[in-house]
Picture 1 (cartoon, rainbow, N blue to C red):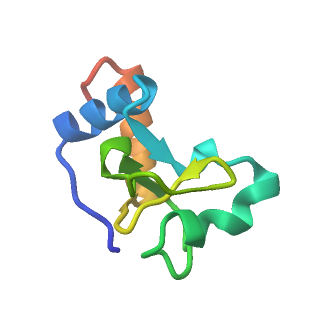
Picture 2 (cartoon, helix red, strand yellow):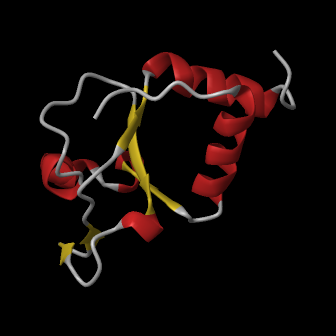
Length: 95
């Protein structure tokens, strides 16, 4: 898993997909269960910041862990791209 560089439009679409319930992120995992991140996102060995996520349609079918979906592959937004996404959302898509 490595950071994926995204265009402004892709970041805005990702934000809308998260809001629309199409994407599961580490933000959906309560602090009490944060030790499960590397089990839920099985390709994550260590977490250095940013946002780990994956589209729910990529979840391993029929298998969950403590009611969380499991993913064999995940994506990560760097901390900078997380900030960029919020900036784009709150500025109406312009920088």
